[in-house]
Image 1 (cartoon, rainbow, N blue to C red):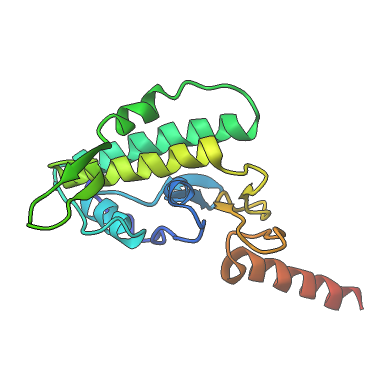
Image 2: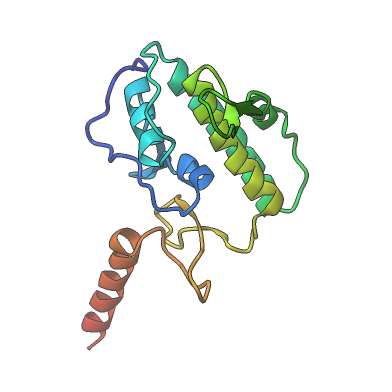
Length: 192
């Protein structure tokens, strides 16, 4: 399979983690017992970046965006796992993306200048820098008691529990939560 092939039986990536770095991790998920990548080309990667709110999509079409996004995902995943396990890890791969996220004062029109925290001439680097910064903030300042994996044994999706009581169990009530409720209902009905 090439990087431009689309696998039609896979869902589109879900945006339900309440944090962009975790949503990036969720662009891989368990499907029929195997971890599968839900992004297969630059167009899908660009659409996902736009979906999570990083502005207009940057599409190169040559696989560069997809490759960079996968590399960023891999670096974030290893650091999240290490942070959840309370062990040290090497942030060099993530820092490579942060190096391009440099603040600049932009003063293009009369009036007040603005601070562009992720100034880059290249939109793709800007988007990846923003995503890397969100991951770095989560790793350094996030409450990792609230970074969770869905409780469904068949699900690999992660989320940041922003609920008031911090009791979120499922990636989504519409997905795994509902399946659990139906299974519990069937169990109770069979027990009668």
